[in-house]
Image (cartoon, rainbow, N blue to C red; front, side, top):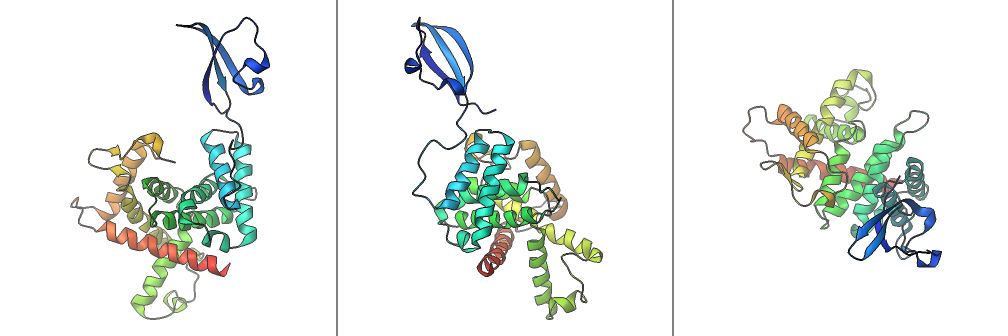
Length: 294
């Protein structure tokens, strides 16, 4: 159930529909209270399901993403949120990569959050995760594009939360990143490096994939500095300013896991800032190349 809050109206002997500053069908509860002006009524209302302002001047993919964000932020029903997310996803899928390639940086946070919600929330009825993988890649593309064009630290927080989701969401991109590095290191085609085995699916290369996706911790550590002060264990700004902000406990667990892989000696000598930026930039370029072919 979604709550707009409390609207105050002065109590009258007879209330007509015209005298009420609210729509009766949206009322959840009423409470009579004493005020310096006499009796009053505190009315708790639902938020409307759809955004109560005009978006017709914005690209359709942005309108669809804003609708999904509105329904998420106002705690609409699960079915209402899922419908909005699926509608946004299908719009992009049916029109190809140009839809996202043409999104202006100022809209990228909005569209990126829509795809992040899809990747983290949607469950396909047949158990397939392919739509989640595609949505996660779209989210990474939009959010990084927006962030590198002057978006605020909320975008870094959204990227962190995306990477903090199930490790399989962006595993293929991390596998591509690591496989291409090996190709350069050995100076031979990927097929020869892996002796004809598929690095993305072959069961015998599961450990390779697990190792590849560990690089996400480097990227997350890089992003964390933009919205969280590890020394004071505090968010850089008001907590309700951020979308999908992890709890302090979750951030603490992440830092412990990061240290177990990349800071075992406790010296913080590993340069996660330049390495994290380099990795996510490469992932962005990989997704961009896919979008240009789609």
